[in-house]
Image (cartoon, rainbow, N blue to C red; front, top):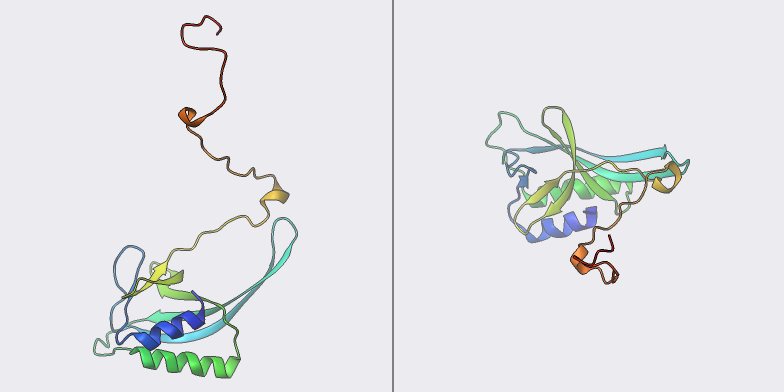
Length: 155
């Protein structure tokens, strides 16, 4: 989800929650402790130089159970961040403390923001010998006619 989409959603809701991939919720008394521009310059295994940019929100909670971050307050934090750093409409990453600091993507289900799992992938499969996955086909869907038939004594 891009930062513009987050802002648009925040304009439409009065309360917000963040749901973890396992279905649990980030405690309602969370804080957004930081927002940052994350830039990743790297070279993939095929030798292509790449650049990725994202906006990172860090969610955190403590013993302050009376705290509730409202959508308009988060929108103001985003505006201040954009006015300070002049970011483009980048994807949003979420940092949240699990067993270690975990990074998530972001989606919205109409009620809650969803922390979505991220996956690694090879970006240069054509350069490093990883074959593309072949589509699976049921034999019953094949249109090729065979001269051999059960009981035909040709096999």
